[in-house]
Amino acid sequence: MNSRKVVDVGPDLHGKDGKLLPVAIKEGDTVLLPDYGGTEVELDHKEYVSICSF
Image (tube, rainbow, N blue to C red):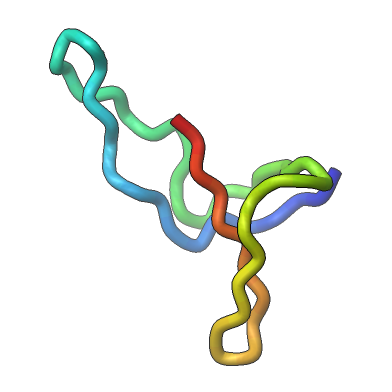
């Protein structure tokens, strides 16, 4: 597994009951990523991995 620093987090999600479900991670957190999945992106000569989790 790889670890990466979170640089941005999307908005909170709405649950089935319509209530907001807060995102469990925040900018600056370090997270573990599997060796597969996600989309690798290079921007301004920096490498990023975009992960979508619902």
